[in-house]
Length: 123
Image (cartoon, rainbow, N blue to C red):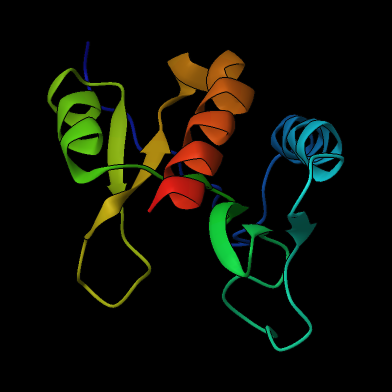
């Protein structure tokens, strides 16, 4: 499979379906013990992120990309197999433990977020 990077054009906002998909992930996970939405101190990065014990594990980036925190080896594998890309927050430095799934993984957002939650809780 080829790696796909999603672009949302000049507006840098997620599509309605991506926003709805993210809202479903939030609704499913926010009910779990220790999971919340962002933190009061977050204004920019992570303001709408899912957190566990104050650590971000899933979010929609400012570019509208769904992003999850996973072990580096897992991200390496997913990227090598063409399922998505490492997250680039826009500073020209790819983040090794952050993964942006490609379009073909749209139905995997919830399982990826659960995997990310487990990783952050056990880190």
